Length: 289
Length: 83
Ligand code: HEM
Ligand code: SF4
Ligand code: SF4
Ligand code: SF4
Image (tube, rainbow over all chains, first blue to last red; front, side, top):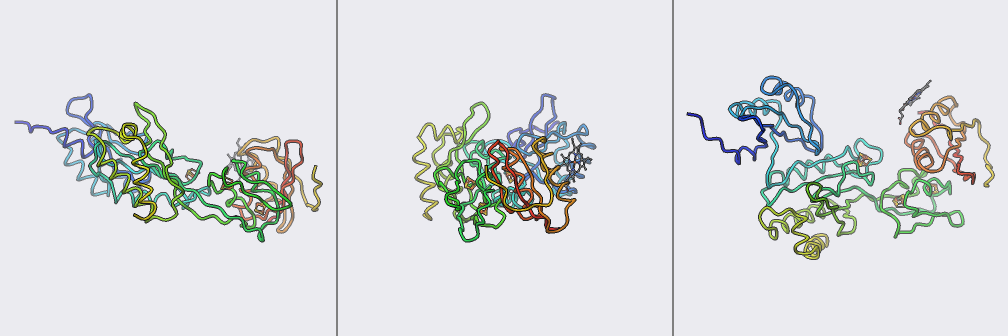
């Protein structure tokens, strides 16, 4: 007799039931958008042997192997594990942490997004919550990874300080700044802090390094981009160190776990209760409490 | 209009190109100079002036000055640094 198939249990392991009876699309775990060559070879072999010889790329840097038969799921997982490939998750829990290439690769990057994505993944991946919960990490204001569409989005930026002595008055930074925050007054550059979005384009373009940039994390809360669309909100000043960042992300997840109704997305909780409660909690975390 | 008050060795006009070919043309021009020579690059306002100076910096060249020609173009003086 055929075994009873428990789809709820299967879904935890990232097996998405297909229209075709008995088949599912198997979601793989990808952190920060990177897979090793070995991972890719293994995935390719599994897709040929057990699937239909192709993979599907999801909108959040995920990879799925469609047309896996449920009877072969255990065998497939084992074959993937041999090549260092883990399966992903679906359902009400912390999802794949996405990332752009960040400062290790991209000239515009302000933070090492990949390392941070791995750390967030180790800290939270798969954690059970009232609804799905997404983290995204992007290296700078160019926002290639679209931070604000995530429940918690993290964007690299820099607090900038002008070193008048090093400035040769070339005028490059004034044009490099897209916010109109810089102007030349008597051969020296003046910064209008209220216009500055911490993009660090001045730092990156100055030929004499007269702009000193201190990297940090710009955090947004409550983004969602599905049936409802809402942009994550910045509730804090730029976060300067990782300990503080993790205190803040812990606080956001705790707030969600404590206050959300079952099956309620983070944004909906914030709409129901107002954003002040979360703001207070993450502000306390930011201040070291 | 600010007078360009520093002598330069070569002038390249990239106002006829759009990104990324602006920088390609500028890059080809600086390749032809010797170490220490100065290139003047005339470029459009907007994306080119926001990005071309920085691309020269990333390639290790030395930016000297950016002049506003007050006709919607800018001229960048950059000293070649052999990589
Ligand atoms: C005689 C003709 C050409 C020469 C001598 C030339 C030369 C170059 C050089 C020196 C670079 C920079 C390589 C580097 O980054 O180290 C480059 C990059 C590039 N070229 Fe060409 N090129 C030519 C034609 C073209 C054409 C016809 C196109 C396309 C319509 C093109 C598109 C590009 C692009 C997109 C890049 C990359 C620019 C970037 O790095 O942002 N090139 N080319
Ligand atoms: S967001 Fe910034 S750091 Fe990340 S890939 Fe885009 S430009 Fe590079
Ligand atoms: S960090 Fe960005 S917005 Fe702020 S002054 Fe520099 S270039 Fe302008
Ligand atoms: S780019 Fe640097 S040297 Fe040039 S004006 Fe700005 S601060 Fe001064």
